[in-house]
Image 1: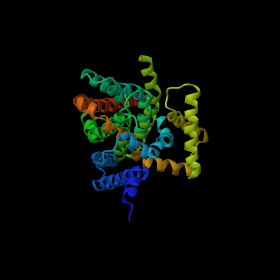
Image 2: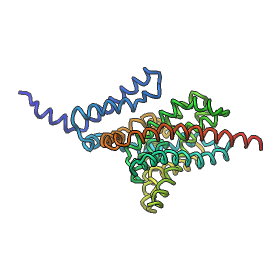
Image 3: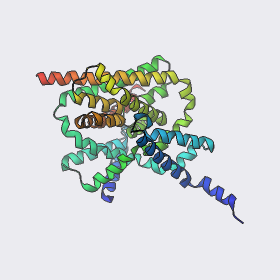
Image 4: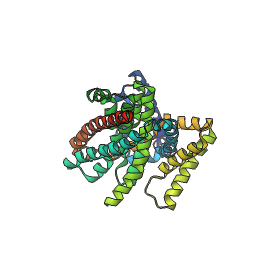
Length: 238
Length: 115
């Protein structure tokens, strides 16, 4: 006689089930993304998101149980954040060519961007935890997750905001640059990386190699600056 | 590639240690990132196995975000209550910020070239 009960128990209790389903969903996401000619709307993670949410609801799984199964993937967030130092280092040589414009834009436009989106939430009476989760929207996702944990925001909301911000920037970037009559490729790249992080950088690659380098530079620098300054500002106001 | 992975883990470890030792509120992994950046600047170049380890981590970075990102299923309440505020902030906030940043950088670049 086959022990179907024991088999069922194994399937619902082993972390392998959700691990395999998560990796598989992401793989499906990559395949669809490539089939759609890498359209920003079809980011692999968005497709994986939708698939896994469906599976979680169908199986009536609690988020805590899901997270427990896949926390080995979550572990890599730390080393991946450290890994960001290499592309930043590789593009650091461009900083010298436009040092003053880069530094002023980094601080002025970086602050402006955060203030505008927080202000928009505030005038619409959003809750404090939502407002705090919006503060990291332009930061590359791994840094956004660990920084939002640090400042008492909701990391999962923060990642959602990061992804949507990236997609909006990638979709409207070229149109905005045309309307604003932006002359330099370096300005376009820097703005894309500063506001729309990695998704913006993927779009900047289509403008030119130099735009992509400036985008990666902006993404790395703003990630570091925001991760340092934001927790200090929040603690000060508390 | 093992050497590269060890390098990443050691820098993260050092970053976390520094954050704890000095009670810093900056995330330890970000301090680790800064330390590795300094290491690369001093060393003046990367090495093969570090390149490979970094490539692997960054290639699958979006996948690494999934466990944290899925937490959104516990937030449907907030999202449905504050849907319009969030949507307006995301769409207009991003468009305004992108326009401002690009123009700002463009004007400064022109100014610098005139000097």
